[in-house]
Length: 294
Ligand code: NAP
Image 1: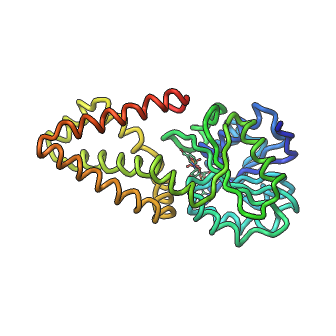
Image 2: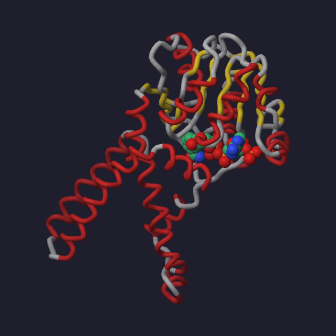
């Protein structure tokens, strides 16, 4: 499946993900014209200065006029409002997609606003960094990483295939999942780890006096790695937890049980339990390296 270029792509939101899509699409010649719209004038200015797109303004409806592909790249909590704003101008037959880290809530927020004569194909590139804004964008972000499409029943298969070819053109590998399944998997692989990182760094920061200063001074591998994750964008992650509440609470309950198991093993000196778990988890890291996803 090769990606035929789109005449006009419109990106609503031009931070790390929107900007990287623009750069990767241009690298692969996937669009004749790429425009964007963002909320604040200073972000539009940065996107134009960095030449991420042909033009970036602050009016989403203006940007989406005549577009063949529209990708909403805002925080999850803003997707519904964006869909409402762009719905009246969407070209018949265009593909509308998003990049939100949560799928069910985004579909629920966007779908009711979108006209019946467009193709709505939600997507989530499982690629990112802790940096945000247009300056953080780079063309290689999606290379070799996965993008998950969560098409709705009844969606035109040709539109889904076209979006799949587009993401492959951006360098990504592509898979398709049911939205609820996506949200449960991401709750354990991405959302819970972020919550743990935010907690650990917050706990360290709450330690008073000397202890706090020494934590920062002697930040060794483990803690340092958590601070990187815990530096991720607060708006984006607030929206992720509020919008994937059920799946996150479910894995959090499991996680708490497992943590108590380890707490007990440490208290009672049950080294074999610790050793067995640490051996099993080491294998998971090795499997990831083998799959090129480390
Ligand atoms: P980002 O760098 O912070 O960029 C966000 C963009 O959305 C900016 O253009 C921002 O506009 C705009 N925006 C923010 N709040 C808005 C609002 N209330 N209404 C309209 N526009 C708004 O964020 P990002 O990292 O690219 O993330 C964008 C989406 O990608 C999120 O849904 C996130 O879940 C998803 N995602 C992120 C990652 C990651 O690692 N970062 C990975 C995969 C998927 P202004 O700057 O003009 O305010």
